[in-house]
Amino acid sequence: MLETNPIPEPVPNVSRSCGAEARQAQSWLFFTSDGKTCLIQADGKGLRTLELDVPNQATWQPGSSLPDGRVMLLSMEARRDGPGRPFEEYYTQTPTHIWAYDIHRRVLEELATQNRMASFYTPQLLLREGRILVQVCRPGYAQIFNMRLDGTDAREFTASAEGVAYGFSLSPHGTRIAFHLASPSGYQIWTCDEL
Image 1 (cartoon, rainbow, N blue to C red):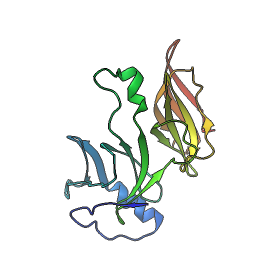
Image 2: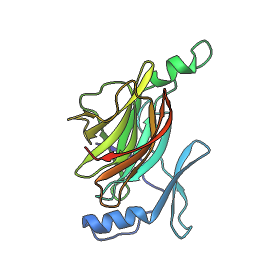
Image 3: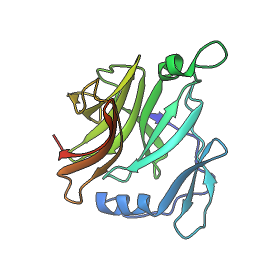
C-alpha cells in the first residue's frame, strides 16, 4: 500500500462499519477536470483536488465505489503514442494501473497486479464477491476478463475476435450483465449471466 499526500481539509469522521464507509464514500462525488481528479461533497461543499504522489503516473481517473467504501481509480503512465508513433499501435502500450483509494485513511492499494496479461488494463464493471470485469488491451485487440480484484483467477468474458465490448451494466441483484459490442458484424447489445 502507498501513502498519499493528505487531502487539504479533513474528511468528517464516520462509523467504521462497511455499510457506513460505503455510504460516506458515496456522499463524495469524484470527477476529473483540467487533468486533475477532484472530489466534492454531494451538497456542493468541500471541493478539493486529490493529490496522489505515485511515481510515473501522469493521469488519474475516478471509478466505482467498492463495498468497503474505497473508491476505484485508474492511473496511466506517460502515453507511448505521439509523433512517429501511431495511436493505433502505441496507445495501448501505455501502462495503466487500477487502485483502491481509502478516503478516510488516504491510502492507495494497487489492484489487479497478479498474473497481468498486458500493460494496458481498464476497469469496466465491479461485480459481486470481490470480482471485476477488466478490459485487457493487447496489440490489435481488446478483450474483457472477469477476475478477482488482485488479478488472479482471470476468466475470459469476451473472446479476442468478438469486437470491442463497452457500456457494462450490472442488474440490481448482481446476477446479470448487459453491455454493448462493436463487432465485425455490426453493433450489438448483449445480456448474460455474471459468469
